[in-house]
Image 1 (cartoon, rainbow, N blue to C red):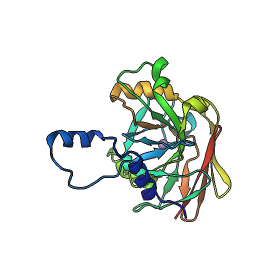
Image 2: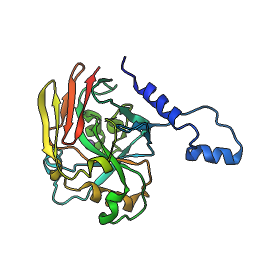
Image 3: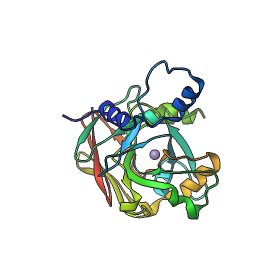
Image 4: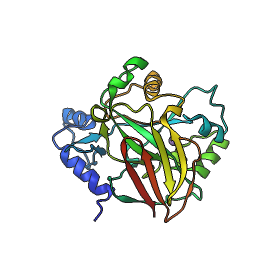
Length: 262
Ligand code: MN
């Protein structure tokens, strides 16, 4: 029996019992009672009886030159740009399991984007690049799933991307691996196969902005905090999936992550 996301979240919430979330602290101070319970969103930590509580999900756009070109921009001239997904869009995927991933509503062009994900244990504003990796707790392998038709339609009208990027289950990822064990990811092959055929294949060295540079740039716009995670962009050859497809994500140094579109 494969635990679904709800089970994983419930386990995470139980583990975190006794740790007051910021919202809960404010409530306690005011003496008011919450009208209902909200499950904490967490990511399992590989090899440890611990979970990583998630505060925000940031994503960087067009961070590999060949992908920037396929999306119609010039990789040499544009500064990095970021968007967010809602925290509860996370779908945790266990190692060794092909997790069911629901094909979302409203789209007929649902795309895979395999990405390295960095998770922060601390933060700040205007973090210098040289200190940026000190804030990284660990890394995961993930998918920035995208309703491409809706994203493109909104972009064409200069409207926000939310409906294309920020829906339920849109932030797929495997367990976190502490950087103290894996080291920091600055190079290594990253790939995605659909039904056994490799579609995306690149190397982290081809990222335009490194994880350290992403943290530095993000911290100019937002005060970063422990619990923030960053999807670091996808290589070229993003493309559509349909129900029944099995996606296999690979990154040198981390276990594979796999989902089936259902
Ligand atoms: Mn992406």
